[in-house]
Structure formats: C-alpha cells, structure tokens
Image (cartoon, rainbow, N blue to C red; front, side, top):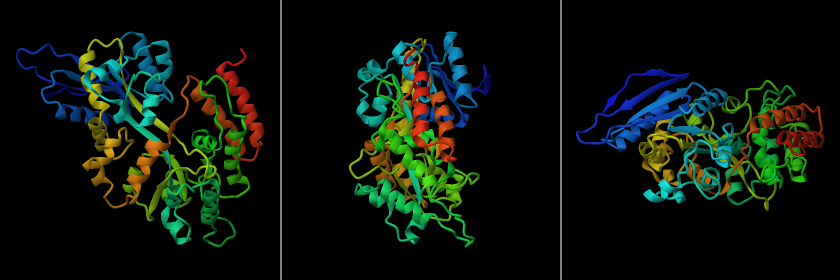
Length: 439
C-alpha cells in the first residue's frame, strides 16, 4: 500500500492514500472524502480503515477545509452545484441543511438498501441518531460522533461544603432546579474577604441560546413546534425555563460577572463550580492541569416529575447520490459509521463524541477511563445520558440566524435590560417572520 504526497485541492488541504492492484482485479476507483479541521484526524481514520481492510483495491483522497461552518459549507455547496462534489462528506446539521436535502431529494444517497443488503442494523446506534440520521423511515447517514450537553462540577468544592453530590441526586431522580439552586448558592463565595464574591456557580454566558434548551424542555416548553412551522418562544413552559436562568443572575447572584473567563478555562481555573458544555470536554480536563476532582451529571430538571433531556450536536457521514464510485465509497462509509470507525475516531482525538453503545464495552475505552483523572461513575452517567436523555435541537435553514437573534435578547436579559416575557414575546414574533409564518 503506497501513500501519495500531500497536495492542494481547490480551497482545501488534501492528501490521499492509494493501493497497488493485484493482477486480475477490477480497475481501482478513487473515493473522495471531505471534512474540516485537523487533517491528521482524518488520516488517522483512513489508516484505521486500511488496517482493517488489507488489500482494499481503491484510493482515498481526503479534502480538508481549515474551518467548519461557512467556509466548509460554501466550498462543499459550490462543488455539489458544479457536479464535482466529494463521494463522502461530513455533515453537521446545525449549520448544513441536511434535512432540507432529504425533503428536496438533493445530493444525498439513501443508505437503507446498503444497510439491509449487508446486514447492518441501526439498532447498534444511539436512539437519538436514528431520529436524526434520516427522514423517520430511512437512513441517509452514518454517525461520526454524537455529543450531548453535559454539566461538569467541581466535586472537590461540593464535597468540602458538605453538599450532596449532584450525580447521586441525579441517580435517584432528584437533580432538580431547586437542588441545583441550593448548590449554586452554597458554592458562590467571598474567598478573600473583601465583601464581594470571587467564586461563583456559573459562567456569565450561561444564559445563551445553545445552553438554554434543556431548561426550556424540562419546563414543558420549546422554541418551535415539532414541524418547525411556528415559534413557541412565548409559551408558558419556555418562559418558565428562561426565567429560571434569568433569576440565577438577577435574583440569586450566582453567576460570574462579565469579563470572567468562560468555559472551559474559567471552570478549570476554579472561577465557577458548574460548567455546562458539550460532552467531549472530559478529554480536555484529563489532559490539563486541574487541581480539583471533577464530576459529571446532566443539566438539572424542573422538578422530580419533569422530563429530563439535554441537547446534542453531531457529525454525520453521507454519500453523494451522484458518486461514480458508490460501492467503493460504501465500503469506506460503512466502516466510518461502525463501532470500529468510531473507535478509530476516539484514538485519533484521544476522546471525543461516542457514536455507538458498543464503545462502552471496548478495551480501549475501559482502559482510557481507568487512567487517573476520570470520575469513577463516568461510563455509568454517560451511557444513561446518551441512551435515555439525549435530544436533538431542530434543524432548519434559518437556524444560525435564529440563534444569533436569540442571543441578542439573552444578552439583554443577562444585563437586566429587558424582562424575560417581553424578550420572548419579541423573539416569537421575529422567529415567525424568519420562518415565513403569515406571509
């Protein structure tokens, strides 16, 4: 197996691997894979695939844009519109209109026939992915990673104050707004005795569009109806969830002031004791200098009877419906979306989002979390989080504009410039305009 030299492709950084064909085999095909960020990650995946599939007679060319978001989207859509798109590419449906493609029959090959032909069961994937990766009946993608929002906490500080461990409360169904608030008040302290708090419960940007979903959902609200045809921002449950977050700032004073380092730097430095962020941060914590023990738990729920959900972000692999190398592309895609591919992803990234429950039983994962710095209950909490409490935010073409607009209001709420109900009433009106309601 030979490796080609690094070379540029369009606006991307590209490099590839190739194979010499044994005599008598079919002519090799080239599979073009497109992703973003660190090229070494994708090389690690391709190397893993080739190691698991010795003698595979095709070539892989990897095209990488330096950034995700708009640069990747624009490059990809330009290529697809010109009929020169990659065979496989990575999708984040939060900013790439995957579900609109499915509705309009654009670009993406349906994978259900391949899965059925090769005996690949969707039951090996997380429940939330089966809701995300297709149109409800058919799958059009396979997972790279799924990353739920997780709450991290300074376990050392919680223990020193004699507080009940949040993970223990969670396991008995009592990790509620009230118990979270009690803990938040206790960990907000004036350590240097100057009359002003210098340790807080939460970072200043805690009230934001992307962190507020779980509090809105568990309060019985939502920002949109299920079909994303109208806004529910002014619904009672939505207002209740955002008011709880607003009160943390203005009524309870447990949030760090503006200018305090945010997540995760502020958490690791001890400025605040609770940090809600995506579920890949444990790798950062373990490999950083942290002088306290940390724990993991879900964001709190409204009360003991409330539904308990947390939002996810995710990366999908899809195949071009106009690919000229579909069978070769499917060979690679099937492996990328399998537990073996997900394990290679974890190795290439040290620790990132988990796409398959089987990873929790792998020797690599079990050995990883046995290293110093990992909480004893990490696997237990994360398995339950993925299996039972992960939920997708809605994906629609205007999602990025909606989030920007929502954060404008949330900054005003954080600064005490506008009441919650007024802000959410205006947000509902402008969200409906964004969706074209009433036009």
